[in-house]
Image (cartoon, rainbow over all chains, first blue to last red; front, side):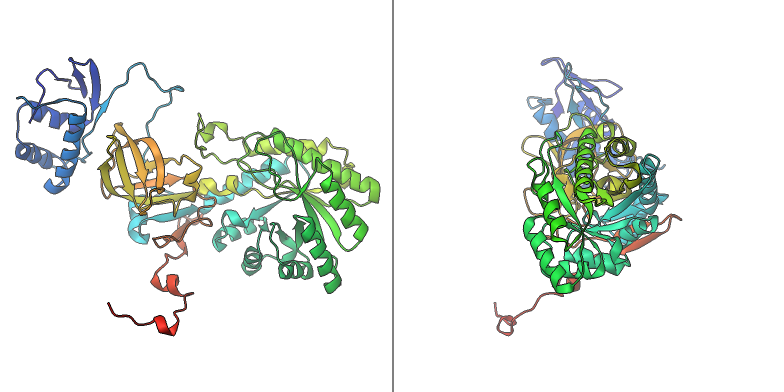
Length: 82
Length: 452
């Protein structure tokens, strides 16, 4: 699973979808996950990166990650083709 | 390396061109401690959820209210509205400050006596006093506020039986220019019913008409309504003195002052719209001083302010049980505080604050309680910080009605703690348990055993 290639993520947490003109904001953890997804990282790699840096365990992280992915899906930011 | 605090990841769509109508910031401040005690520690020591009452705030609010009225009018008396919060510790803080007791049932009457209030300082309101209630109050010399003619005639019987003259006031309802006009309680002023009640009392000579009382409504945001109410009661007092040469000793304008909570559907927060005690005092005392009552006969002014006196002193602390995503995409937060503990969430948009510092990121959230009931919603739609399972939160301004109208439903009611003026927490009502819950039950013998 990847984020669509044309989605722009700024360093300050703004997300822009040029195909619809819609803008979004993400918080710090959201931004990190988005960037890791854009880099093509796997869930395991993302979970390791986040749980190393933040005070959350893997099982705790998984449900929040799934919820975040659902929201990315809801906003059509996921690239299913790639 | 110390790990950073984890905040659930969130993405939120920006709606350009749709700013808030009033440009108010949605930022919700964290409340990490109450009166010097960390929320986390209070919950660790006393369990979650937890009610907290601040004795400091109770006393300072009372003193503010008293000062607003006593600096404008020579004779002022507050009476603590028991139904707003009748925990003994709360009542006694107000009694220590000088408030009488205002009760609306036999239970509340006896609770006031048990708290140590002398019977002559108890005002007995309410539409459902029993014959026994009236007899006790008459024999004790309490102030009885008559609600309807059936009660008036019952009181005449009590007077005959006891050979004592009950000390009474009539409750008066009236048009004060506000909607809804409360006409359920007492005798109507505008159609002459109140004047008729006064005449029957005066002509019967079986009762002592000590006062006149009104309670125009609840959460009244216009002080003008109180000015009208006080003027109309003053007119009745003047008419009574003119016709019978009888001086009305007190005028009781009841309660109903708005607190700073925000009503559902209000455009601006209650903190911006609720009149101050000074505003109310100005309207009420101005009406009495400018009335035709003779200066030497100015009545004692009694106030039964409940909500505005205690709301700010109360906090409800709780814990997030779960996050979930509703079918609509909206975040749902499930907490251990439900409508069973926060009855006032049926009419207020309560302010809910995280107990720990959070980022400025929020998400459109519905906040639910723990009850297995669809109605258990604390906030239907609020831009709320991203709390996770186990995080704590604080609900402000919950002192009024929640510790009396709470529901024993599905869950036990939790500890209530009062933090005293020295900062020491005291449990003032213990958490319920199975023994408490079943103490009043009786199980018939034939239902004791079963096989499954």
